[in-house]
Amino acid sequence: MGAYINFKLIDESQAEEANEWLKEQPEQQELIEIGRGQIHFWCEADRQHELAKEERGVPDFHDIGEAQLKASGLGYHRSDRIKGLWVDLFEKLHNHDEFGVKLLSNSCGLSHHYFSHTELLTITDNKEALSDTGFDDFEEELAQAAA
Image (cartoon, rainbow, N blue to C red; front, top):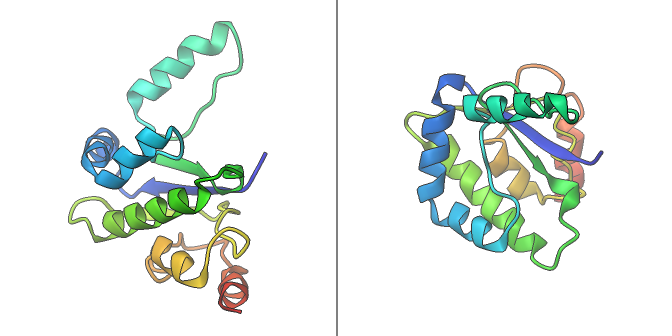
């Protein structure tokens, strides 16, 4: 359980390429050093790894090209830094020439409880990256974040 930001690549076939690009970004490298909060798009290798778990437990599945960040799991002394790195990476992803990203409507982590007004607008690319449905309350979140 928790509050997650759920998002996906518009072209899921780019998952491995996007993951390689992310590894080169200084923000992702810092997240790796911190040891939490890295962005990773689900790819075929992840699916195969989880399929191997079926015999010994419950596998964890996402669709190829999906990613998830747990905003509510940052009760950690560097949480502001991690969130700042996420915001910077989302901005880079939105501005990337090849990778398109959409935020999914089940992203309860897109909340004024976790992010400022400016951060929410950056993560959502000024709301342009929101998936088409399910964000009816997002304007209210933005208003509360601005208050």
